[in-house]
Amino acid sequence: MAEPSSPSTPCSPLGALGETKKQTQQEVFVPGRLCLFGEHSDWSGAFRRFNPEIAAGATLVLGTTQGLYATARAAPDISFVATDGDGRRVGPWRCAADRAALLAEAAKGGFFSYVAGVAAVVLTNHRVGGLAVDQHTTTLPLKKGLSSSAAVCVLVARAFNRCYGLKLSTRGEMEYAYQGEIATPSSCGRMDQACAFGSQPTLLTYDGDRLEVEAIAVAKPIRLMIVDLGQEKDTPLMLRSLQRSFPGPPTDDVGRNVHAWLGEANRRRVDAALAALRAGDAAALGAFMDAAMADFDRLAAPECPAQFAAPTLHAVLADPTLRRLCHGGKGVGCGGEGSAQLVCKSEAARAEALAYVSESLGMWCCGIDVGGSRGVTRAVIPAAGYHGALFPASHVTPSPLWPVVDDRDGLVKPAILLTIEELVDRAGVEEIVVVVQRGDVGSYERALMRTPLDEANEHRLNEKAAAYAARARRLGERVALVVQDRQEGLGHALLCARDFLARRHLEATRTPLPEEPVLVVLGDHLYREASTVSLSCAQQLLAAQAEHPD
Image (cartoon, rainbow, N blue to C red; front, side):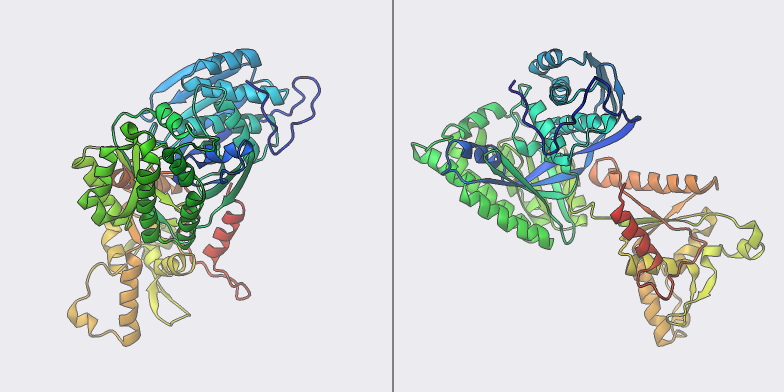
């Protein structure tokens, strides 16, 4: 393998082995990645080194919330224990921290070749020792077009970076991961390692050896569904076929069409999709996926009809039930009979589509959100405690439901409703889990207006109170009540909330609950900002979390 090119952060000038500062054990997470638009233009744009007539490549890539979790520490040699999606442990794999030995292991292929390849690149550029990695949890679906191999490569680069304090930028980690993967028999482009940038959508452009990266903000989340078609495909054959006319110039109409598909037409597709993403326009994004699929069938598929005809893919995309539930879709990654991605019309539509694909079509599927990790959108209110100091009042009514006069509208409200109002209306929290005692469920149901008012009582409400009853019902739609049968403290209450969310998420998406930040608000406290502060207490906390997410 040629000497790896330097990353964006220069190599550390070190003397004797071991002078790099070793860090304590590190926790590392790397997501998968999904190419939304622009597949194959990463390698076509690289051919501009030899033919400037080729257009620069551009891809829109989404990092998933699912991924690989690991602990890592400095060690004398290289060792790696993996965990598959079913929790089975694989390894440990070991190799001496020696560049030649690692390159030989990388050339063998297989899962651990990625570990060896990246380790060889790091040892080429830095005087460091070995690394022990325990990849203990996998939430990323494997072999579903989500680049699990690239995630492994980025994980190893990131683990070296953190354990030895190499001060690599994210671009540097991505570069080491790419150089390590191409040391193996894998056929990857530069796009694959975009998972290094996390779960936000990212625009990557490729002009010869130059790579530019831009993070994309999404106005509101877009719900995607990934479907594994369960068919065989020949990825090396598809790549060889598409690359037949590169660097060119092409000599026949088929080759010229592939150049056109990966050229300016690709940039127009990516720019249109980029505008839809920024606006959070799911309908437009789905329509652009339909159009991109049609362009692929017209311009690229003739290069390898045996692989790109993809009858299963086209049957899924044209399925009447999925057309009703989705705005549009296209193939994933290299193309052919691999996986499909579809833009769902809503969360409810996605839940129905997931059930349909799994039960009626018999295919594996999962949900992925574009813009779904845009901040803290969920809160937990522990409210199951019993306050002996407030007895006997707390024996009659749980303290979070005690009446409080709201000085903003003059209404007397259960205290917890003041907190829920702030979380939903001011902090933008989308869902609240309230943990309660079993015997108090009915009281909370009434506070959230889930128990209808008697007609006689409803007539007694003045106009302001009647309007608030409707508002309380709206707030209640954001709240899930979870029972804590044994009051074993705050931590146990949070575990009850987590278990509820994990079960519901697994039922809806067939994937584990992703690791996301949650705002914890005590149910027996009232929160009011100072008169000189414009942000509510919850908004202040969320602003601080956004500035310091780690």
